[in-house]
Length: 434
Ligand code: ATP
Ligand code: MG
Image (spheres, rainbow, N blue to C red):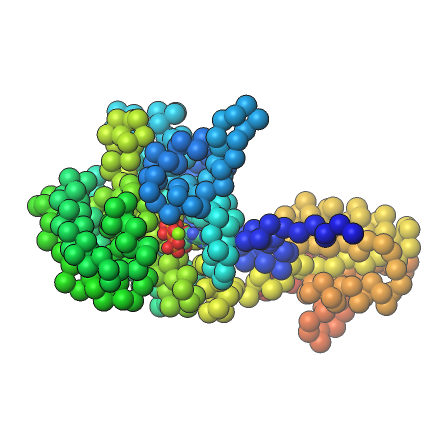
Protein backbone atom coordinates (compact mmCIF):
# COMPACT_ATOMS: atom_id res chain seq x y z
CA UNK A 1 0.00 0.00 0.00
CA UNK A 2 1.31 3.45 -0.81
CA UNK A 3 2.13 5.88 1.98
CA UNK A 4 -0.54 8.52 2.64
CA UNK A 5 0.35 11.86 1.13
CA UNK A 6 1.59 14.35 3.68
CA UNK A 7 3.01 17.84 3.81
CA UNK A 8 6.79 18.11 4.08
CA UNK A 9 8.11 18.11 7.65
CA UNK A 10 8.41 21.64 8.99
CA UNK A 11 6.06 23.02 6.32
CA UNK A 12 2.63 23.68 7.73
CA UNK A 13 -0.88 24.11 6.46
CA UNK A 14 -2.67 27.05 7.97
CA UNK A 15 -6.16 25.81 8.73
CA UNK A 16 -9.33 27.95 8.66
CA UNK A 17 -9.26 28.18 12.47
CA UNK A 18 -5.84 29.84 12.26
CA UNK A 19 -6.18 32.17 9.30
CA UNK A 20 -8.33 34.87 10.98
CA UNK A 21 -5.51 35.56 13.46
CA UNK A 22 -2.95 35.63 10.64
CA UNK A 23 -5.07 38.04 8.63
CA UNK A 24 -5.56 40.28 11.65
CA UNK A 25 -1.81 40.26 12.28
CA UNK A 26 -0.92 40.97 8.65
CA UNK A 27 -3.50 43.73 8.39
CA UNK A 28 -2.28 45.37 11.58
CA UNK A 29 1.32 45.37 10.32
CA UNK A 30 0.37 46.60 6.83
CA UNK A 31 -1.63 49.52 8.23
CA UNK A 32 1.17 50.44 10.59
CA UNK A 33 3.76 50.43 7.78
CA UNK A 34 1.45 52.53 5.59
CA UNK A 35 1.33 55.00 8.45
CA UNK A 36 5.12 55.35 8.42
CA UNK A 37 5.37 55.71 4.64
CA UNK A 38 6.78 52.28 3.75
CA UNK A 39 5.64 50.80 0.43
CA UNK A 40 5.15 47.13 -0.29
CA UNK A 41 7.36 45.25 -2.75
CA UNK A 42 6.84 41.63 -3.83
CA UNK A 43 9.74 39.50 -5.00
CA UNK A 44 9.83 35.94 -6.37
CA UNK A 45 10.25 33.08 -3.93
CA UNK A 46 13.04 31.50 -5.99
CA UNK A 47 16.31 33.21 -6.94
CA UNK A 48 19.69 32.22 -8.33
CA UNK A 49 21.70 30.51 -5.58
CA UNK A 50 24.54 32.94 -6.25
CA UNK A 51 22.45 35.82 -4.88
CA UNK A 52 22.31 34.34 -1.40
CA UNK A 53 25.92 33.19 -1.41
CA UNK A 54 27.08 36.66 -2.28
CA UNK A 55 24.85 38.57 0.09
CA UNK A 56 24.41 36.38 3.16
CA UNK A 57 27.97 35.04 3.11
CA UNK A 58 29.41 31.62 2.28
CA UNK A 59 30.29 30.69 5.85
CA UNK A 60 26.98 31.46 7.52
CA UNK A 61 24.64 28.79 8.90
CA UNK A 62 22.08 29.66 6.26
CA UNK A 63 24.32 29.22 3.23
CA UNK A 64 26.34 26.35 4.66
CA UNK A 65 23.52 24.11 5.71
CA UNK A 66 20.03 25.55 5.57
CA UNK A 67 19.24 26.39 1.95
CA UNK A 68 16.86 24.53 -0.33
CA UNK A 69 18.95 24.48 -3.47
CA UNK A 70 18.18 22.59 -6.65
CA UNK A 71 19.08 22.55 -10.32
CA UNK A 72 16.66 24.11 -12.76
CA UNK A 73 15.95 22.10 -15.93
CA UNK A 74 18.56 24.09 -17.78
CA UNK A 75 21.18 23.44 -15.11
CA UNK A 76 20.98 26.81 -13.29
CA UNK A 77 21.36 26.51 -9.54
CA UNK A 78 18.27 27.96 -7.85
CA UNK A 79 17.39 28.42 -4.19
CA UNK A 80 14.13 28.93 -2.33
CA UNK A 81 14.70 32.22 -0.56
CA UNK A 82 15.88 31.77 3.04
CA UNK A 83 15.30 35.46 3.83
CA UNK A 84 14.12 38.60 2.08
CA UNK A 85 16.82 41.24 2.26
CA UNK A 86 18.95 39.71 -0.51
CA UNK A 87 16.01 39.53 -2.93
CA UNK A 88 14.86 43.01 -1.98
CA UNK A 89 18.29 44.50 -2.64
CA UNK A 90 18.48 42.56 -5.91
CA UNK A 91 15.12 44.02 -6.98
CA UNK A 92 16.11 47.52 -5.89
CA UNK A 93 19.29 47.28 -7.98
CA UNK A 94 17.63 45.67 -10.96
CA UNK A 95 14.98 48.39 -11.17
CA UNK A 96 17.17 51.29 -10.13
CA UNK A 97 14.93 52.06 -7.16
CA UNK A 98 17.73 53.59 -5.11
CA UNK A 99 19.75 55.25 -7.86
CA UNK A 100 21.27 58.73 -7.36
CA UNK A 101 20.69 58.67 -3.65
CA UNK A 102 16.94 58.17 -3.97
CA UNK A 103 15.33 57.25 -0.66
CA UNK A 104 13.33 54.02 -0.66
CA UNK A 105 11.33 52.73 2.27
CA UNK A 106 10.05 49.25 1.45
CA UNK A 107 8.44 46.25 3.06
CA UNK A 108 7.56 42.73 1.98
CA UNK A 109 5.99 39.63 3.42
CA UNK A 110 5.89 35.98 2.59
CA UNK A 111 7.28 32.52 3.10
CA UNK A 112 10.99 31.83 3.62
CA UNK A 113 12.66 28.42 3.53
CA UNK A 114 15.42 27.00 5.69
CA UNK A 115 16.31 23.39 6.26
CA UNK A 116 16.45 23.48 10.06
CA UNK A 117 15.33 21.07 12.75
CA UNK A 118 11.59 21.73 13.08
CA UNK A 119 10.35 22.54 16.58
CA UNK A 120 8.05 25.05 18.24
CA UNK A 121 8.75 28.43 16.63
CA UNK A 122 11.19 26.96 14.11
CA UNK A 123 9.99 25.59 10.80
CA UNK A 124 11.32 24.83 7.34
CA UNK A 125 8.78 27.05 5.66
CA UNK A 126 8.12 30.07 7.82
CA UNK A 127 6.91 33.60 7.21
CA UNK A 128 8.58 36.92 7.64
CA UNK A 129 7.52 40.50 7.30
CA UNK A 130 10.59 42.50 6.38
CA UNK A 131 11.18 46.24 6.21
CA UNK A 132 14.13 47.93 4.48
CA UNK A 133 15.16 51.57 4.06
CA UNK A 134 17.76 52.70 1.52
CA UNK A 135 19.85 55.85 1.22
CA UNK A 136 19.22 57.01 4.75
CA UNK A 137 22.43 57.03 6.75
CA UNK A 138 20.74 57.14 10.14
CA UNK A 139 20.65 56.90 13.04
CA UNK A 140 17.23 58.54 12.78
CA UNK A 141 15.89 55.89 10.44
CA UNK A 142 17.43 53.08 12.52
CA UNK A 143 15.44 54.55 15.41
CA UNK A 144 12.29 54.85 13.30
CA UNK A 145 12.40 51.15 12.43
CA UNK A 146 12.68 50.22 16.09
CA UNK A 147 10.05 52.72 17.20
CA UNK A 148 7.54 51.42 14.68
CA UNK A 149 8.02 47.86 15.89
CA UNK A 150 7.55 49.09 19.46
CA UNK A 151 4.26 50.66 18.36
CA UNK A 152 3.31 47.34 16.78
CA UNK A 153 3.98 45.39 19.98
CA UNK A 154 1.80 47.84 21.89
CA UNK A 155 -0.96 47.60 19.32
CA UNK A 156 -0.84 43.81 19.50
CA UNK A 157 -0.81 43.86 23.30
CA UNK A 158 2.55 42.08 23.70
CA UNK A 159 4.87 44.99 24.52
CA UNK A 160 5.30 43.89 28.12
CA UNK A 161 6.69 40.57 27.01
CA UNK A 162 9.38 41.65 24.55
CA UNK A 163 12.77 43.13 25.25
CA UNK A 164 14.94 45.09 22.85
CA UNK A 165 18.61 44.18 22.66
CA UNK A 166 21.00 46.51 20.87
CA UNK A 167 24.60 46.44 19.79
CA UNK A 168 26.91 48.20 17.41
CA UNK A 169 29.11 46.19 15.06
CA UNK A 170 30.98 49.25 13.80
CA UNK A 171 32.45 49.30 10.31
CA UNK A 172 33.91 46.42 8.31
CA UNK A 173 37.53 47.67 8.79
CA UNK A 174 37.36 47.83 12.55
CA UNK A 175 35.79 44.39 12.58
CA UNK A 176 38.91 43.09 10.82
CA UNK A 177 41.06 44.39 13.71
CA UNK A 178 38.64 43.14 16.30
CA UNK A 179 38.44 39.78 14.61
CA UNK A 180 42.21 39.35 14.86
CA UNK A 181 42.16 40.08 18.58
CA UNK A 182 39.22 37.74 19.11
CA UNK A 183 40.81 34.91 17.10
CA UNK A 184 43.94 35.24 19.19
CA UNK A 185 41.90 35.08 22.39
CA UNK A 186 39.87 32.09 21.22
CA UNK A 187 42.83 30.20 19.81
CA UNK A 188 44.54 30.39 23.22
CA UNK A 189 41.46 28.66 24.69
CA UNK A 190 40.82 26.32 21.76
CA UNK A 191 40.57 23.11 23.80
CA UNK A 192 37.88 24.50 26.07
CA UNK A 193 35.56 25.57 23.23
CA UNK A 194 32.63 23.56 21.92
CA UNK A 195 33.09 21.93 18.54
CA UNK A 196 31.02 24.45 16.61
CA UNK A 197 32.95 27.33 18.07
CA UNK A 198 36.27 25.65 17.29
CA UNK A 199 35.22 25.41 13.68
CA UNK A 200 34.06 29.01 13.65
CA UNK A 201 37.42 30.43 14.77
CA UNK A 202 38.59 30.00 11.22
CA UNK A 203 35.33 30.69 9.38
CA UNK A 204 33.27 33.22 11.33
CA UNK A 205 34.79 33.94 14.76
CA UNK A 206 32.29 36.67 15.71
CA UNK A 207 29.57 34.04 15.75
CA UNK A 208 31.35 32.40 18.69
CA UNK A 209 30.17 35.39 20.74
CA UNK A 210 26.55 34.32 20.48
CA UNK A 211 27.24 30.62 20.98
CA UNK A 212 24.46 28.98 22.99
CA UNK A 213 26.98 26.72 24.76
CA UNK A 214 27.23 27.75 28.45
CA UNK A 215 30.87 26.69 28.81
CA UNK A 216 31.82 28.74 25.76
CA UNK A 217 29.83 31.68 27.08
CA UNK A 218 31.67 31.48 30.40
CA UNK A 219 35.00 31.55 28.56
CA UNK A 220 34.08 34.77 26.81
CA UNK A 221 34.01 36.84 30.01
CA UNK A 222 37.47 38.29 29.47
CA UNK A 223 37.33 38.34 25.66
CA UNK A 224 38.13 41.58 23.84
CA UNK A 225 35.02 43.77 23.46
CA UNK A 226 33.96 45.04 20.07
CA UNK A 227 32.81 48.24 21.74
CA UNK A 228 36.40 49.19 22.56
CA UNK A 229 37.27 49.08 18.86
CA UNK A 230 34.51 51.35 17.53
CA UNK A 231 35.74 54.52 15.82
CA UNK A 232 34.27 57.93 16.58
CA UNK A 233 31.76 57.88 13.77
CA UNK A 234 30.39 54.51 14.85
CA UNK A 235 30.22 55.64 18.46
CA UNK A 236 28.34 58.77 17.42
CA UNK A 237 25.94 56.72 15.30
CA UNK A 238 25.21 54.37 18.15
CA UNK A 239 24.82 57.22 20.66
CA UNK A 240 22.42 58.95 18.23
CA UNK A 241 20.31 55.83 18.01
CA UNK A 242 20.18 55.44 21.78
CA UNK A 243 19.27 59.10 22.26
CA UNK A 244 16.33 58.72 19.89
CA UNK A 245 15.09 55.59 21.57
CA UNK A 246 15.34 57.35 24.93
CA UNK A 247 13.41 60.31 23.53
CA UNK A 248 10.68 58.02 22.22
CA UNK A 249 10.57 56.09 25.49
CA UNK A 250 11.57 52.74 24.00
CA UNK A 251 13.32 50.60 26.63
CA UNK A 252 16.39 48.59 25.58
CA UNK A 253 19.43 46.82 26.88
CA UNK A 254 22.86 46.80 25.29
CA UNK A 255 24.02 43.28 24.53
CA UNK A 256 27.72 43.38 23.52
CA UNK A 257 27.50 39.75 22.37
CA UNK A 258 24.74 40.41 19.84
CA UNK A 259 26.35 39.82 16.43
CA UNK A 260 23.54 38.44 14.20
CA UNK A 261 23.96 35.41 11.98
CA UNK A 262 24.39 37.15 8.66
CA UNK A 263 27.60 38.64 7.35
CA UNK A 264 26.22 41.82 5.89
CA UNK A 265 25.47 43.85 9.02
CA UNK A 266 27.37 46.93 10.20
CA UNK A 267 26.83 49.61 12.86
CA UNK A 268 23.49 49.11 14.64
CA UNK A 269 22.06 45.64 15.11
CA UNK A 270 19.06 44.75 17.23
CA UNK A 271 16.80 41.91 18.27
CA UNK A 272 13.45 41.84 20.01
CA UNK A 273 13.40 38.81 22.29
CA UNK A 274 10.75 37.24 24.47
CA UNK A 275 10.79 34.69 27.26
CA UNK A 276 7.38 33.35 26.17
CA UNK A 277 8.55 30.96 23.47
CA UNK A 278 11.29 28.86 25.02
CA UNK A 279 14.43 28.53 22.96
CA UNK A 280 13.02 30.34 19.92
CA UNK A 281 12.99 33.69 21.69
CA UNK A 282 13.82 36.16 18.91
CA UNK A 283 10.69 37.52 17.26
CA UNK A 284 12.22 40.33 15.22
CA UNK A 285 15.79 41.10 14.22
CA UNK A 286 17.69 43.46 12.02
CA UNK A 287 20.28 46.13 11.63
CA UNK A 288 22.24 48.33 9.30
CA UNK A 289 23.94 46.93 6.20
CA UNK A 290 25.71 49.82 4.56
CA UNK A 291 28.09 47.59 2.60
CA UNK A 292 25.59 45.12 1.18
CA UNK A 293 24.43 46.91 -1.95
CA UNK A 294 28.02 47.47 -3.07
CA UNK A 295 28.91 43.88 -2.21
CA UNK A 296 26.10 42.85 -4.57
CA UNK A 297 27.45 44.91 -7.44
CA UNK A 298 25.63 48.21 -6.95
CA UNK A 299 26.89 51.62 -5.97
CA UNK A 300 27.53 52.23 -2.28
CA UNK A 301 24.04 52.63 -0.84
CA UNK A 302 23.33 52.74 2.88
CA UNK A 303 20.62 50.38 4.01
CA UNK A 304 18.94 49.30 7.21
CA UNK A 305 16.15 46.86 7.90
CA UNK A 306 14.68 44.07 9.94
CA UNK A 307 12.51 41.00 9.62
CA UNK A 308 9.98 39.65 12.04
CA UNK A 309 9.03 36.01 12.36
CA UNK A 310 5.28 35.78 11.85
CA UNK A 311 4.82 32.27 13.34
CA UNK A 312 6.62 33.29 16.54
CA UNK A 313 4.53 36.44 16.92
CA UNK A 314 1.32 34.51 16.29
CA UNK A 315 2.41 31.99 18.92
CA UNK A 316 2.94 34.88 21.32
CA UNK A 317 -0.53 36.26 20.65
CA UNK A 318 -1.97 32.82 21.35
CA UNK A 319 0.15 32.22 24.45
CA UNK A 320 -0.74 35.60 25.91
CA UNK A 321 -4.38 35.35 24.88
CA UNK A 322 -4.13 38.57 22.88
CA UNK A 323 -6.68 37.50 20.29
CA UNK A 324 -9.28 40.17 19.47
CA UNK A 325 -12.79 39.07 20.35
CA UNK A 326 -14.14 39.85 16.88
CA UNK A 327 -12.06 37.02 15.44
CA UNK A 328 -14.21 34.48 17.24
CA UNK A 329 -17.14 35.00 14.87
CA UNK A 330 -17.05 34.53 11.11
CA UNK A 331 -20.75 34.98 10.33
CA UNK A 332 -23.03 37.88 11.36
CA UNK A 333 -26.31 36.81 9.80
CA UNK A 334 -27.60 33.42 8.60
CA UNK A 335 -30.38 33.34 6.03
CA UNK A 336 -32.88 30.43 6.24
CA UNK A 337 -35.42 29.89 3.45
CA UNK A 338 -37.96 27.10 3.07
CA UNK A 339 -39.00 25.78 -0.35
CA UNK A 340 -37.97 26.69 -3.88
CA UNK A 341 -39.97 29.96 -4.14
CA UNK A 342 -38.65 31.23 -0.84
CA UNK A 343 -35.07 30.25 -1.77
CA UNK A 344 -35.28 32.32 -4.96
CA UNK A 345 -36.63 35.33 -3.09
CA UNK A 346 -34.01 34.90 -0.36
CA UNK A 347 -31.23 34.85 -2.92
CA UNK A 348 -32.35 38.15 -4.45
CA UNK A 349 -32.77 39.70 -1.00
CA UNK A 350 -29.36 38.49 0.10
CA UNK A 351 -27.66 40.01 -2.93
CA UNK A 352 -29.43 43.29 -2.25
CA UNK A 353 -28.21 43.18 1.34
CA UNK A 354 -24.65 42.61 0.14
CA UNK A 355 -24.96 45.71 -2.08
CA UNK A 356 -26.18 47.86 0.76
CA UNK A 357 -24.08 46.49 3.63
CA UNK A 358 -20.72 45.59 2.11
CA UNK A 359 -19.12 44.68 5.46
CA UNK A 360 -21.86 42.23 6.36
CA UNK A 361 -20.89 38.58 6.67
CA UNK A 362 -24.00 36.89 5.46
CA UNK A 363 -24.33 33.17 5.02
CA UNK A 364 -27.24 31.96 2.93
CA UNK A 365 -28.33 28.44 3.78
CA UNK A 366 -27.32 25.93 1.12
CA UNK A 367 -28.78 22.48 0.62
CA UNK A 368 -32.35 23.30 1.72
CA UNK A 369 -33.46 21.35 4.81
CA UNK A 370 -36.21 21.38 7.38
CA UNK A 371 -36.87 24.27 9.72
CA UNK A 372 -35.07 22.41 12.48
CA UNK A 373 -31.97 21.55 10.48
CA UNK A 374 -31.54 25.06 9.06
CA UNK A 375 -31.90 26.50 12.51
CA UNK A 376 -29.26 24.19 13.85
CA UNK A 377 -26.88 25.34 11.13
CA UNK A 378 -27.67 28.99 11.83
CA UNK A 379 -26.87 28.48 15.49
CA UNK A 380 -23.68 26.57 14.76
CA UNK A 381 -22.47 29.26 12.37
CA UNK A 382 -22.07 31.64 15.30
CA UNK A 383 -24.32 34.24 13.61
CA UNK A 384 -26.02 36.88 15.75
CA UNK A 385 -29.25 36.82 13.76
CA UNK A 386 -31.17 34.38 11.63
CA UNK A 387 -33.30 35.70 8.79
CA UNK A 388 -36.32 33.48 8.17
CA UNK A 389 -38.26 33.38 4.94
CA UNK A 390 -41.18 30.93 4.74
CA UNK A 391 -44.39 30.92 2.72
CA UNK A 392 -46.20 33.35 5.05
CA UNK A 393 -43.37 35.87 4.87
CA UNK A 394 -43.11 35.44 1.11
CA UNK A 395 -46.75 36.24 0.71
CA UNK A 396 -46.58 39.31 2.96
CA UNK A 397 -43.18 40.39 1.55
CA UNK A 398 -41.72 40.43 5.04
CA UNK A 399 -38.94 38.63 6.77
CA UNK A 400 -38.52 37.39 10.32
CA UNK A 401 -35.37 38.46 12.15
CA UNK A 402 -34.53 36.18 15.02
CA UNK A 403 -31.80 37.14 17.52
CA UNK A 404 -29.75 34.00 18.18
CA UNK A 405 -27.59 35.14 21.08
CA UNK A 406 -30.05 37.06 23.24
CA UNK A 407 -33.55 36.52 24.53
CA UNK A 408 -34.89 39.44 22.49
CA UNK A 409 -38.13 38.87 20.58
CA UNK A 410 -38.21 37.84 16.94
CA UNK A 411 -39.31 40.72 14.72
CA UNK A 412 -41.08 40.95 11.39
CA UNK A 413 -39.74 43.50 8.93
CA UNK A 414 -40.79 44.55 5.42
CA UNK A 415 -38.32 43.58 2.67
CA UNK A 416 -37.80 47.23 1.84
CA UNK A 417 -36.71 47.98 5.42
CA UNK A 418 -34.46 44.99 5.89
CA UNK A 419 -31.06 46.55 5.28
CA UNK A 420 -31.75 49.62 7.45
CA UNK A 421 -33.04 47.39 10.18
CA UNK A 422 -30.03 45.07 10.13
CA UNK A 423 -27.63 47.96 9.98
CA UNK A 424 -29.17 49.50 13.06
CA UNK A 425 -29.21 46.17 14.88
CA UNK A 426 -25.57 45.44 14.10
CA UNK A 427 -24.02 48.85 14.43
CA UNK A 428 -23.78 48.65 18.20
CA UNK A 429 -22.35 45.19 18.04
CA UNK A 430 -18.75 45.40 19.19
CA UNK A 431 -17.90 42.24 17.34
CA UNK A 432 -18.95 43.38 13.89
CA UNK A 433 -15.93 43.89 11.67
CA UNK A 434 -16.34 47.17 9.85
P1 ATP B 1 17.42 32.14 14.95
O1 ATP B 1 18.63 32.58 15.73
O2 ATP B 1 16.20 31.94 15.79
O3 ATP B 1 17.73 30.98 14.04
P2 ATP B 1 17.97 33.93 12.78
O4 ATP B 1 18.98 34.88 13.30
O5 ATP B 1 18.40 32.81 11.93
O6 ATP B 1 17.07 33.38 13.99
P3 ATP B 1 16.86 35.92 11.00
O7 ATP B 1 17.51 35.43 9.79
O8 ATP B 1 17.34 37.15 11.63
O9 ATP B 1 16.79 34.74 12.08
O10 ATP B 1 15.27 36.07 10.72
C1 ATP B 1 14.46 37.04 11.36
C2 ATP B 1 13.38 36.38 12.18
O11 ATP B 1 12.71 35.37 11.44
C3 ATP B 1 13.86 35.66 13.41
O12 ATP B 1 14.08 36.54 14.46
C4 ATP B 1 12.73 34.72 13.70
O13 ATP B 1 11.69 35.40 14.37
C5 ATP B 1 12.27 34.35 12.32
N1 ATP B 1 12.83 33.05 11.93
C6 ATP B 1 14.06 32.78 11.47
N2 ATP B 1 14.21 31.48 11.19
C7 ATP B 1 13.00 30.90 11.45
C8 ATP B 1 12.48 29.58 11.34
N3 ATP B 1 13.21 28.57 10.87
N4 ATP B 1 11.19 29.36 11.71
C9 ATP B 1 10.41 30.36 12.17
N5 ATP B 1 10.85 31.63 12.29
C10 ATP B 1 12.12 31.90 11.93
MG1 MG C 1 18.69 30.77 12.24
